[in-house]
Amino acid sequence: MKKSIFEKEMENPKFRAVYDEVATKMNIGEQIAELRHKAKMSQLELARRVDTSRTAIARYESGNYERYNVGTLMRIAKALNTKLRISFSA
Image 1 (cartoon, rainbow, N blue to C red):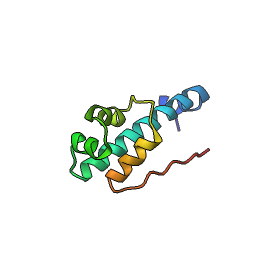
Image 2 (cartoon, one colour):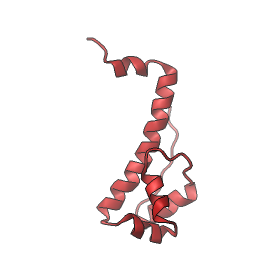
Image 3 (cartoon, rainbow, N blue to C red):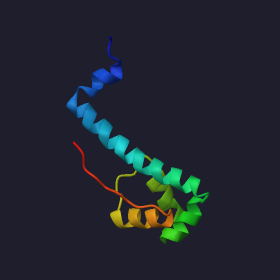
Image 4 (cartoon, rainbow, N blue to C red):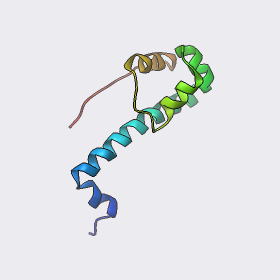
């Protein structure tokens, strides 16, 4: 079976490392946005519950943000009635 371009690129360790990093960032933001939507909460409402700004929540929800703060993530989790879980995997 012929490999896709993506499958071939994923064999390159440098490409895979960059892909994994970007995917992780996007996943965090996507999870926050999804949980917020399920809670029927606006970015502004979540920001007020977390004691931050709406623009900070928007940054956290974007796939481009790189400076996640564990304390803020914990407050976001609490405001969304969920728990924060951080893990390492090989």
